[in-house]
Image (cartoon, rainbow, N blue to C red; front, side):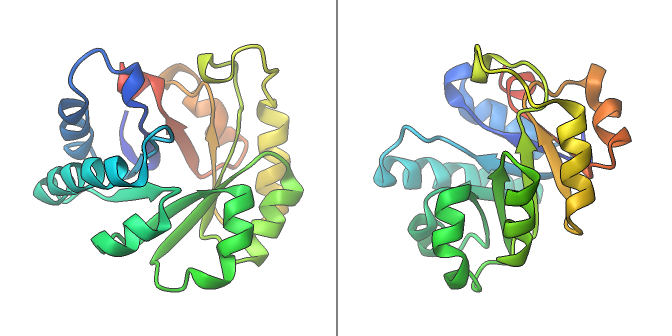
Length: 185
């Protein structure tokens, strides 16, 4: 799957082959961006990994978005940041040096608040059952539709999104979808 309505979200622990090979394959696709979402790393280890991923993305003209580590993004000159919702709200007034700022939301009201606070787009989820949220009931397509209707910024569905259900996402009015497992393994 590829196209400007597809965002790849990383989780190196799901990879069945070397992580940087996966990044290289993703960088060759025509994706909106690759979100480097490696939450378990220290800032130093994340920065090292980000440098390697940045080099690969630059080679293929791919977009890389850093996740959570604002100071690492600034240090490396990465102009795209995706933040967990509470962190986004806390930092929203101090992100004007980024070209693209996005956050993850779990309620239409959070999407509205994110839009007011300056988010360029949001991830709304989780839409379908997924191993990443084992045992948690998915919010479903109706939630995604309500979120899309609540805001003027693009909404990307996340959670259990695959090629087989991608059209369902788009039918809600969502701009696109985020894929993790499908790309990582």
